[in-house]
Image (cartoon, rainbow over all chains, first blue to last red):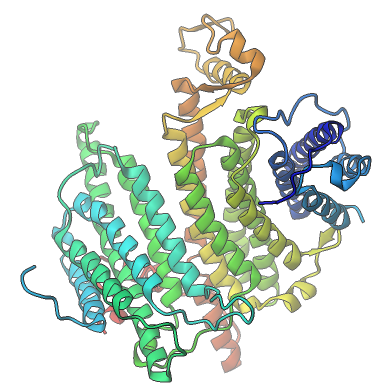
Length: 115
Length: 498
């Protein structure tokens, strides 16, 4: 458990909620595409996005809605990139402890699937 | 028992092994329900005894921690599977409560006594001498062999019961309460997967390991370790809590694992490590169907997960993360699948056959765990998805009196629940449709496991043929001649007599 007791910036926490929704939507879209495309890489992307979503939700209060409001974008990689850009709007210390792991996960996914 | 038990650990293990063989000889006369009820205790005691044994791997430089080797992981997998099977069996009419099987109980007691002896007399883990190491390997092999033989005995008894029920059903058209054909068949399939896994661990080491000739194989690859840890964690999570988000992650991770399996076996077939015809005609279609069924289940679980309950179990996520990373490292190159030659350089393709067998045995057991989840009355689903499924499943039934002109006469979900999309109990016909989907998943995975059963043998035959310089027929022996299935006659195979 982290010993960091600094309060989380409410705007940063809000934006983290949006990051979770972007990742959740990206994951759903990747798995929708996988239904008609046998490429294993698409499944690796989908599972990576699932795990990133779960990681983001771990940082938010229990019961956070990960689906609404759903972003309009339908390209999973664009949504992933948008999530990464959103994390840059605030300083890392404004986010809850553990966010740096999430950011690393998002960057790894981008490197793997959209270098 | 009267008087003090003076048997040594070695004697207790030997007696357990002999007891398991004696069960095999008398299995025709044994009670399947009693055996199934007691089997969980045997596996649990074996797992605890294994834990009490000194580690076989060297300590890590900084932490002093001993990492598990591939056989340590295998016993953990078997214990987790057995626990999952017995948890779901509780409260069912069959095998139900009742007396235990005496001989299996004695095996469990011997294992527990041996664990107790080791724990009481253990010293602070000095490096073991060479004879001690050989003795340790022999003890591990005995335990695994007892589980292998024992699981086969229980599987034969349960399989016989399933056949008796099938005949009864055919003769009378119905079964009396307490006679569950479905539960017997499911238990038989899970025991067969258990036996196959234990058999794969013993293959190539038994009985040599008992004479101290065994050498621990090279450390398993990252993928093999990750898959074993995934198997253990998935069973632990699915038996500990019932959550559609966890079920969705499990189904999606299985899809990734099977996609990797397809890629690796294709490469292995391309370079002649697996029989190409077996791969093309049996294995590949079976694995693809299995993967499709997991993805169908994942879509159902996704729809049934309320939007505020999407967080998954942390330990399950960690295990899935490592599995995904290991698969990615092996089969991907940037944004595409790696070339076959690159994959061949990254892994030992001669081990893909055995790995695939283990993956598909795990796959089947997780399919059963998923099926069990669908029958659990505590399972809930997101209100909107439940409502949509309720309407869709009723609409497809023209005899249903509760729909008229494709519209339901009564609401399945309250407007308030619909608005909040909160978790609601499943109506019976929605549950039935989920259980049917999970049943199809189990069927597909049974076919895939059976298709993989010949892989090791084909590899061995091919390499022998290559050594002899003869053209390869690559047909493999008949199914009944292979190790895990060689015992399917209900009598011990030759190697069990040693």
